[in-house]
Length: 364
Image 1 (cartoon, rainbow, N blue to C red):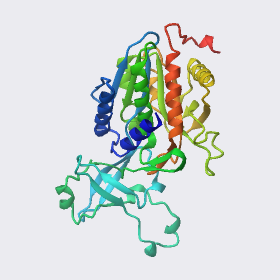
Image 2 (image 1 turned 45 degrees about the vertical axis):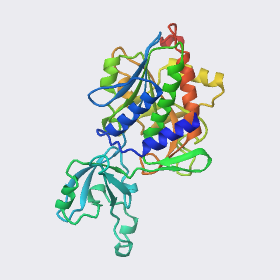
Image 3 (image 1 turned 45 degrees about the horizontal axis):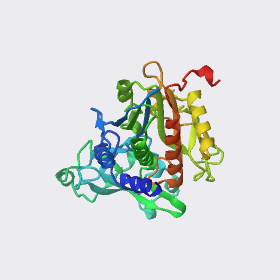
Image 4 (image 1 turned 90 degrees about the vertical axis):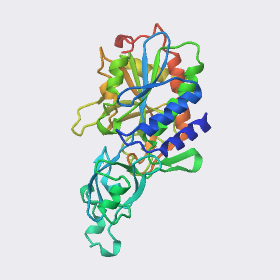
């Protein structure tokens, strides 16, 4: 299982899939499901879903396949390129980064975000973060016509240059651990669901545009009308010196359950999980001997925040893997946490049957 999850994640991280431009990732996931022997379908937005019939409350188990990045905003006469951010891109992590301008498979253009020469910076500039609007991208072009000639135009998607690196102790780093790690977990769960003989109806989905507006999963949820929603995403690892006051989630410490998330920056939304889901995952984790970490964070938001309001309401929870360095060009996770999360999800789904109660009064 560990080898399969690692292989899927590392290969998926090498595919560019900016929010709104996820099609290469979607096609790869569709092929991987087909290789397992699982049929899938996609909707107009590009959400990909595989359906597993069963009995009991229906479950929408999903993660997003897109990544954050940029859009070409302007091409200067000298061929230098200006960008617009798409998603929560941290400005302080941009200077000197390699990027990929996506103009078509096999034709993508490598480039760098320029960083003013050190010898020319003033003492004040050495300690300043340059606003993204003032940054420019250098692909080596000498004119706007040259950029146009290879397909670089206003509106072209741009991502961090894809990277996937093995580190010590089963840890990996890459440009889109968020959330190709989640995609790898769901592929493994799909393998297990294909072999089961009983369990609830499960709609296993890979969704789009989470990094853009967190609503790519909403039309899919509206069509599926699930009773239960389980989203797979990151939990902020807090075991580095800059994060130790934020919580108690350690890389390699096992999967995490989000008990509270709230964006708090202009978006009054988040998730307070349904007590039936909290009880389910706590009980199953204890039964099968998987350590379950707990997370409560402000500044975190997933598209489950909107899915929870579909129909009569969806019993929802975010189940997570610890991750360091979120939204930077090099995120980091521990594959062992992904393996444990896959095992926990599979075991928890097996406990949802026709008599599984979603009454809040049964758990509070």
